Image (cartoon, rainbow, N blue to C red; front, side):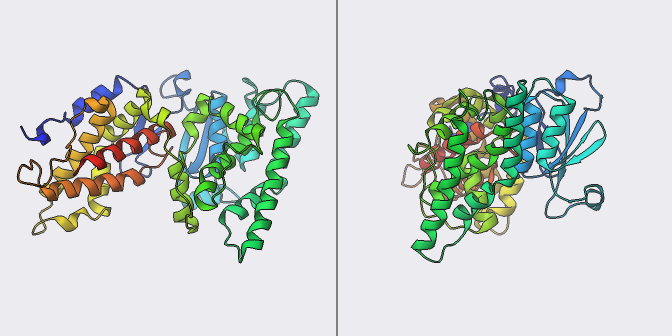
Length: 407
């Protein structure tokens, strides 16, 4: 039997995946993004009811300021709708609506609010429970001051200058690092003021203000500066804060994975890597809920994925006489095989080096197309635009496994 006939159909793969994950997305045909996550609290309102909050955010889920608001909405369990804004071609109606023309913006019961900090505070005022500011008046004042300082203390400018700037020499790089570490020392001291891992005695808006930036730094510094924030003994409280943050389900829904952050920095700012990406999380990659989510996303969105590969990966160059029928079959097969492996792990049938030699059962061109498709899609997915960070990690680990088995 040909190995092409040993992999389940897309419909069977989708059905099996959905039995192992509750993650669902809404399809957006012909739009960007092609799918979007369903807010976890949308079920709280009757069908066909307008949610109380409309969030305007970027299409790629790259914006750290949009992430702040999304994080708060999930933490506070507020039903909301999303309008995606193409930052490279903002619609005129949005430019006319929002004075800054920037994202995020939000309509909270039809009242427009913009700038992430102001949206967070407005949400806290309108939806006070569950609270993301302390009840104690003195601690509440401290938290509000920390929220303000997150925007005004120069943290973002200094840390991203160290990450992204091209220093003229080693002396300038040392100065950038010293300024960067001084800012982290300030956060380390702030985290020491209250018991527990957060900036105040409970999780709050202060943590949300810093989370997108610190997460991006932790992912990118090892690759682009050879500097490790996680596991660094100089910053034990920041590391305890990371650990606590990663226990929060809402954070898992909105965060990016390390590879998405790495690719974004290089593609958008042209920073060249000097080190290797952090190892893919072995624990997340084996969790069935993440593996099933990745398989579900791939199976449900397969037509878009296959079309993207055919158009942009270069596989069509292997087509004989311009006929892409076999190319499309090879792409389809290898993506089904990927979904199968995500669901069944080592129980899935893999090529196992059946390419080449007199006993070969797979055409070399077929295998080459598969390798190109897998390598392309590995770095094409983006978390959380396409799937959660945990699912993206499971997806990339599975691709790596299949790539080593193609030949």
